[in-house]
Length: 65
Image (cartoon, rainbow, N blue to C red; front, side):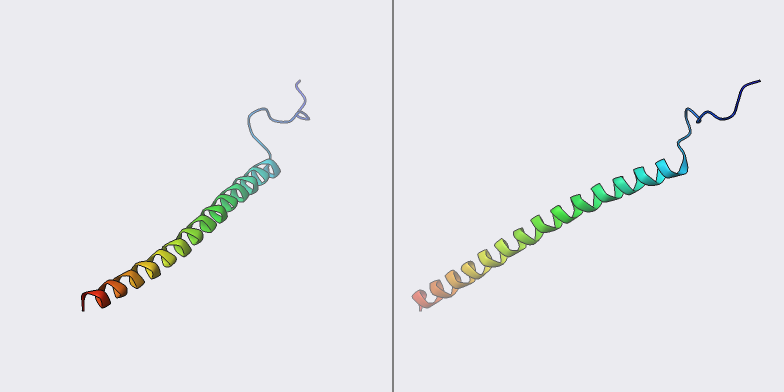
């Protein structure tokens, strides 16, 4: 008669499922944080570019008058 003491081969236990889920969530959170930093940096560059272009427009309007 086979003993039931051995671990199941194909079914991970609850702890393994939770650990894998937490690892996946951590990686996703890290990726989102990095993407957020990149987007914030891009926003700051765009704000700077907009202010330069607005200044250029004002200068051009003054020279036409």
